[in-house]
Amino acid sequence: MNFRQIKSWQWALLVIILLVALDWAIRRPDARTRQLNDILATQASERLRNYPYQFQVLRVEGETAVMSTPRNFDAPAFRMLGVLYPKINVKDHNNPEFIAVERLLGQVQDEAKDIVLAQPGIKGIRWELDRQWLRRQGIEIP
Image (cartoon, rainbow, N blue to C red; front, side, top):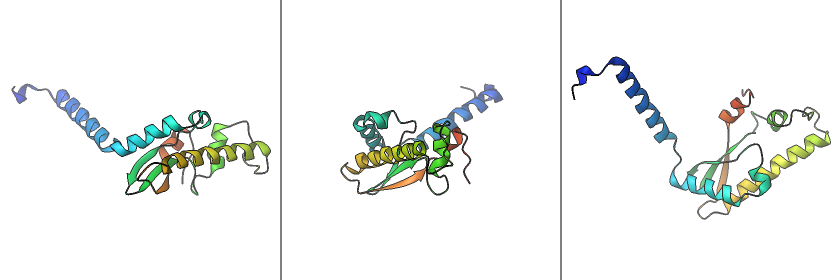
């Protein structure tokens, strides 16, 4: 094969393909993370499976599973709940509908945490804000 005959657009295409493959290899979850996410999917209740946000294990660091969450101090729950439930007044923290969806969020997050904590070798959970999901929902994060 004569490399001089390869056109510049072909080189550019080859470089793009290699960069995509490298990005995939770097971001690909390890076997333990994939296993925990599979367990999470199979053991989840119907309520957790059908919740609009899917909690996931992002990685395992020692005996700690790092899991995604749509809320923390930078992105309070009312922001994402307002997007998921636009008909509910999430600014009124005494609104019974808001209290109900906030409680549901806590319950499904606790269920996801409990499933992962029940697995051998996992002794703790650390939550990491899912910034990509929030951005896809149009939620600005400071």
